[in-house]
Length: 312
Image (cartoon, rainbow, N blue to C red; front, side, top):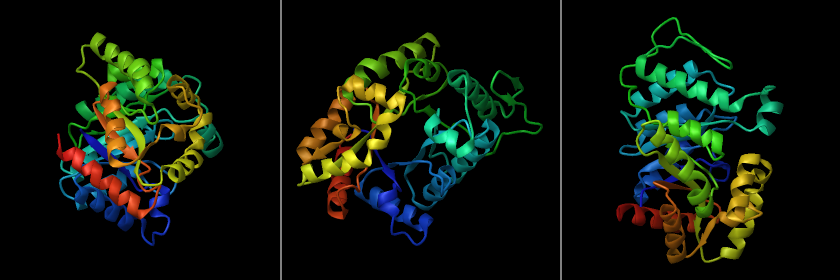
């Protein structure tokens, strides 16, 4: 199994005295367990691309990715520069994940309202790819102007995988045509197999692109107390239930609560449930919420994920 782990979630850094040091320590624990792909979410209080660059340069032999950078508050030129810096810092071990953003967050926080989110996504991916691959762009679209006056190429910043947290059909089609894959979070095996994989795969094929990567994110905890941890997961993950894109995949899976999708149980149960994601078409899976049950459960979880990773 090709597996990764989300690091630096709020619960895992709540007692931190230096956030960067805490991220590095968390990354080392995951890498020492045998998992070689790390994912960092974007929060208000740190920059995930910068953090990925630091972690990837400090912890050898791990791939670091951001899941995800919202595209509306950041211009493609800015993201291109930051991503290339992280790619150079990690010597080619960086992955860029982008997200369309949630109006419930971006409206109050930034005063942003995007009328044409799919048009913006398409224009963003077109221009970002030009900035990364050609070192320039001259684009004047409906939602974006991207016309840098100087080169955007950075030595050492080449060949960055560009991924999108796409789950709805129009976003999946744009992603299949213009990006390298999708990072659907909290989309269960049924939603993946019926709603995500067929749409993005068909779009990539029509565009003459390689088979897209499908990197499914799911909460994973190995524990001897599944009822206790399930209750924590349902409480912790309730936020997603009122965001339309997540609500759609939850409904497709036949669940009401996001926490119902969490893979929680002993080693055999967790391994079996992870395999269902690959059977549904995921090319990779990353485990989130591994810290939810406490330090002992986290250690068991990382040990299993490392064992499964080494079994590739």
